[in-house]
Amino acid sequence: MAPEIEFGNDVYDRLDRSRSTKVSNMTGRILNQSELDFFHSEGYLRLSGAHSKRCLTPLRERILRELSRLKVWAGGKSLGSSLNNLAPFQQIAKLSSMVKIADLDETLNTAEICNVVAGLTGRAPQSGQGTQPLLSLPHQGPWSLRRLYWHVDLAAKSGAAVPGIQVFYLIDDVIEHGGATLALARSHRVAGVAAGRLRGSLKTPGDLEAVLSASDTKIIEMSGRAGDVFLMDMRVLHTPSVNSSSRIRMMATTRFSLRASG
Image (cartoon, rainbow, N blue to C red; front, side, top):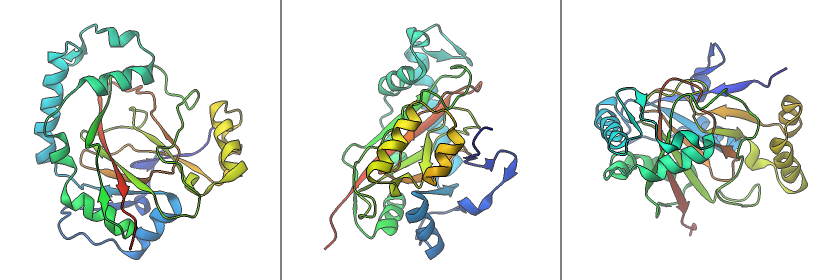
């Protein structure tokens, strides 16, 4: 039996609003205790509508113009770029490095987002790398949980203070199996020999449901609507996924390291 995956909007067909925080205006946003507890327990938090569609529409248009200029995508179809010959994850890395949007960081990495990061950790965030696009072309192949690139961006001991937070922004709607980043909720709490065993099992998954059950972890797909934002403890295992949809996956990410307290 296939493992249950929690999507940005649904667990399959059942709407689950318990994992979503509706935000129409981030100004002065104060996280409540249940949100703080959820983030530290699960390793992620989703904010719905953190960015307005009004500010994202020009950003999407600039990305599409850049893809057309690069002769990658225009008029709703591929222009036969050499990217099509790459494996899905190689294509994602190459495409995301090719596309340059001058005001990407200014538009998405706002003071309000920084305040939420600080509110989750009690420490001031630093984002030295700016914001990078996360893009993938449609029709990369059948969606699968096999042969994925599970990794962490910061290695740290389980139970220690959060070493950093990675923020994922949805620039456009991202549907289920549409190439969204996958995260393994609660994997930041798996340490030592158990952590090594979990990573090994994810590389060559047999009974994936049994692996997740044994490690008390759950796969989260960061799908949702344009403007949604996911904040993730950087100790959480995560991976790109295959875009099997007919839409370009438009996301972006900022990595925040955290200043030591005191």
